[in-house]
Each structure stands twice: as structure tokens, then as C-alpha cells.
Length: 210
Image (tube, rainbow, N blue to C red; front, side, top):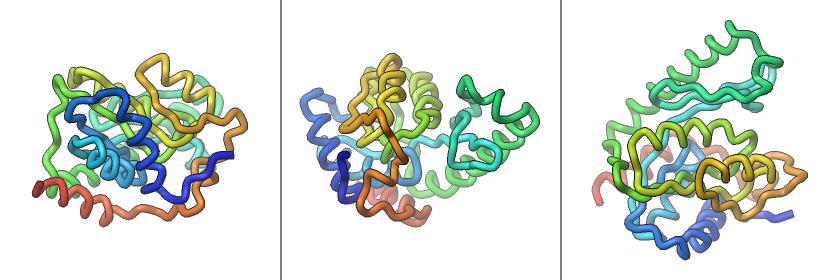
């Protein structure tokens, strides 16, 4: 079982794995909140710039940490094939509305300190601190593709082997570990504290003045 000391160490290892790809001045998009910590480190290592990609998972009834899908900033919804077995249409609609509200609030806070980085014609790296169902990353990928980037790479420290394989059919994927007996993202970190909105705002504000 591969362990990372913390998000910063995982980011340094990911940056080293991304370097051979020859990305040109990449925009490194972190998925809030944990992914933003990694994106900050990777963007500096690769000589690019950092920004956020706003997407939220749609949690299962009674188990909000288990994603049955996700919604991105434009309101596009990605549902997993098993979503209809676990939740009815009314629940899914209500959950989409709730997560869109979170996205709008984060956009208000984050964009106040860091205007959105244009992606057209750019090399883009999508980063999170790990994958579980892959729903949030899929929704993020859909939103990014609309902006016509030159190249898109998904970069994560860890994710289930089947999810990594699924995403690899949609984009270039760099995953440091893809266990078949995946447990949960936090299980692969020795230190995995919650990341606050204040921390994300602080990281973004540093890039806003550079």
C-alpha cells in the first residue's frame, strides 16, 4: 500500500511524474478544497499557473461521501450508472440545487481574489488529492473541454484501478497509485487534514499578485 506523508509530498511526486510530459506553461486546476493544495505545489514545480475548477459531487442518500454523480460550474450533471438505483429523481434534483449553491458561494469567494484563468489553447492539468468514484473529476473534465484547451491531463496521487482506467479513456491520466483494493482517499495519507475555504483563498491570492 502506497502512503503519502501529506498533500504537499504527494504534489511533489506528481510534479515529478508530470515533468516528462513536456507541458508548456500549464494551467494547473485544483478541485477544491484538497486538490488546490496540490495544484499550488505542482504549478510552481512545472513553471505554470494555478487556478481552481469548481465542481461538486452529488452524494448518495444517507451516505453523502459516496458520489452518485457530480455537477460542474456550468450546471452540467454527470451521473453514474448506479445513481438511479440509489436515489430518486426528486432527491437528485434537490442535491444538484444544494451543490450548485455551494459552487456559487465558492465562486463568489474565490473569484474575488483570483480572476478565472483562460484555458483556450493552453495545456491544462486537473488535480485532486485522490479519486473515489471519479464523478467530480469527470464533471470537471467536461467543463474544461468546453473551453478548448490544447491538452488536458488528469493528475492524482491515488484512485481505484477501475476508475483510473475509465478516466484514461477520456483523457491523459497520471496516477501514482491505482490499487484494486481501494479503501478511501484519506487512507493513503499519513496526514490528511481538512482544507478550509480560508486556505484556498490564501493560496489563490498569492497567484493573483504574481
